[in-house]
Length: 597
Image (tube, rainbow, N blue to C red; front, side, top):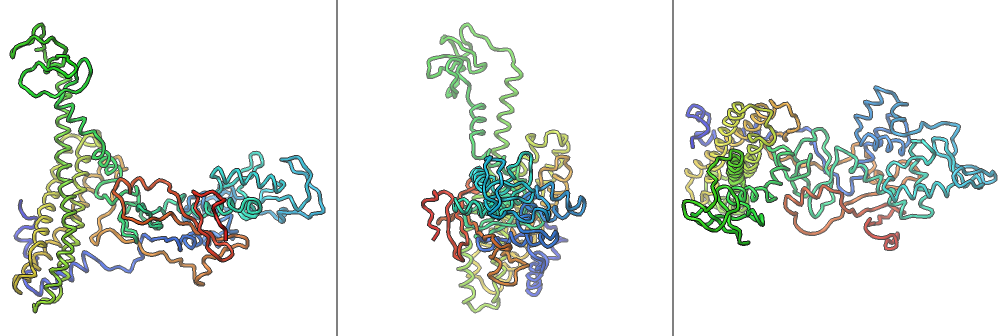
């Protein structure tokens, strides 16, 4: 296969030692620009989860001059999208913002939620007269006895509605004050009060489009927040790389839908069924698939039924090699022949793409073992008295090989759906599909050729080479690293602009290509915090801070199937601050097993 770069383009390659040194600087500065820009993704650990939630709460509280529970109700309603909340506030005003979220604007006439003990009041729910200090009024103005409120809150929490508990008055959509809920429930059911606090904190992740749990298994306990781009691939601090959109393993240049279909196709028995369709016929009596193992067109099933292999019709056992007694099927059946040809063509096409996808995936696994070998070679070379002392070009080339091999592997899954008829049958004419297919395959082959050359060079025993030969292979590896990175960029540009960009159906978007590899999420630090441990204290008196952590276990991460399935809700080990001590709670345990001390 021809090289990607022509003779004229090779003039810009590094042909001397000084130029190769410039090449390293060029690769670090151009391919891997060092930017002071804040990372778009952040890791929210168990310890920083409360601080992350408080940061958004304080922004809303400061802007609207409201209490914490009102700010939380607004943020839960708008799925913790602070910018959307502010936009509604600017466009529609404060009253519309509050009414839409079920927040009742505080009215001075309801300044006291409780009454004096000397007064007697009637509860409209239980129809009983109770002392005034046993009555509680919400911001919406509805007043009932504490027992009725407590029963209402208990039912709502047990039914999983604790994040937005509405007033129990008929057709009242006001959200109850979380401080009142906590105080009343904790008197009879302390475990439910803690569960209520946990649900409020979990809402920051469960209801937030910008924050998702890391899908590692066993779970690392971290969550990832994507500030701007929701369509990205990110690396958690635990080392797992995944797609933030679908929580599957990183799969660009495939879209999330393409990758889900490809995983399913590789996992289930759809292609086995295709093979059975092509190579077997169903017995007309027992309907079991029968494979022909001889030249005669009379086939006998294990059930004893004889039938014609050409048409599948039941026959007797009398026959010759030329004909079957009392049977003739010389008439052409167009539909059946087309169906078999289509099944065979689909199977051949899938086999072509899957074979190459699997080959590059296997190569990537084998090359992963190359890292230890490279480190040993570098260690030996550094001990030798060579002119060249810096061997970072080897590790840079190895990293480039891993990234490009991954892109190359997933490009075959992308091509299978991009140029098939399953997703884009009505989006392109056959002529357009063929033209785009040729354009993509040209770039794919160029990338494949250079990746294989880079892999071959990295396996060379450079620790045994002379000075001149080490300098020569160094220049080659740097050149190929630059070429491979350029080809990956061009392939992504082709996919985004020429292939997916021209389609009317805009659901197939891919994560952008990054020369430095998948971005590692930075640690979260609350920008508002300046008092250290004070970030874990409640903002309002009577509000208890609660930390939430998904359950952790020891062991290695599972396969891609487990990664994707782990996006479902999982049991979480929770912690709450009680009397300045952290109490670990497990939602799977009964309240009797939880020791609050």
